[in-house]
Length: 279
Image (cartoon, rainbow, N blue to C red):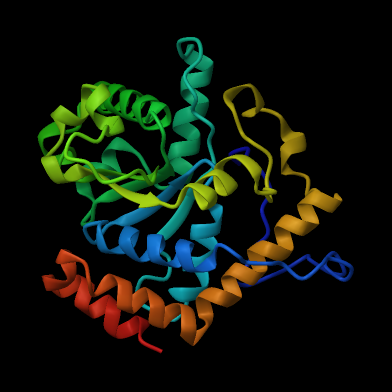
């Protein structure tokens, strides 16, 4: 079994017991901004399979867990809980573990080449270091397996949730400082901006339900033990609240209203999703 951080199933909860009995009621002050951002991620994903990289956007994953629960998209949203900040070059052991984790998330060169939908990696992005590392390692694996890059390049997408800045014609975008997006179709690398206070909360300050999972912990089996500490219980309460919010008519209505402003609304797949999301 592939090693990885323990995380409760929030849509079909189990093993929670009395953990939340004394947890304070979560204050989802960021819910509206997160919902609008989530709607744009859905609209810009190109009808793909979403994989949330790391843990920065766990809240978006949880919100979608509730919102998509009774739609045909249930099961098309997953997590890739790896921390891939660039460090030393990958040795053979680390490379093997990385590929095991990718395969456990349903991502292999074989599946990418034969999948019917794009695979869309979503992450909170500043300079794009995690996306760059992920792309480099995927491309290396694809070449080694001799799977058709000409096919796979049309099925890979990277969707960054970026720090909102004042709109300017010459505004800096992270993908302009790296070369690899030039190897993909123009629509394969896209962004959705998020208000600075919410962006920094999710990336820097939010209590997380799981520990970070950098390569030095990929074989650490203690990471599979549930954390019952105060901060983890606060994170668990917030995560459950986000799943419940996603199920609510108010959030689904806001998702629909935001999605319908997006250009992709002209596409049948997105109109179908909107119909299923309507309260």
